[in-house]
Length: 149
Ligand SMILES: [Fe+2]
Ligand SMILES: [Fe+2]
Image (cartoon, rainbow, N blue to C red; front, side):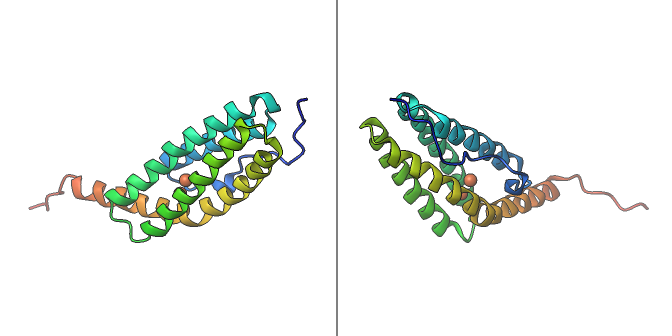
């Protein structure tokens, strides 16, 4: 039987905006995919959860790469958090594939709560750092204004 989801579905809110477009874009699609998984009937849950996992691999991988490339000082803790959460999501996929839907739905609710906290703390700090890196780069490559004679 297809159970109807009872948990509140995750929803995008502008409180999640970090004013760094590459991150905001990925975060919006994460919320869309997670909402789709939360609303999926049981027989589609494994496929929808798999899409969340694949997207999260790219999402976290990209943030990890930014942190490493720009020598972000708070990188270690952030990268570890990504790894731990991704491992949990992979366990969720195994649960979904073995029909343990209630456990996956519970995980989806926890993931939504974690995501909001993570976005507003660690990702917010990274977004600020990336905006600074971009501003420094722009300043360094801007044409030098010649002093008027
Ligand atoms: Fe993120
Ligand atoms: Fe992150």
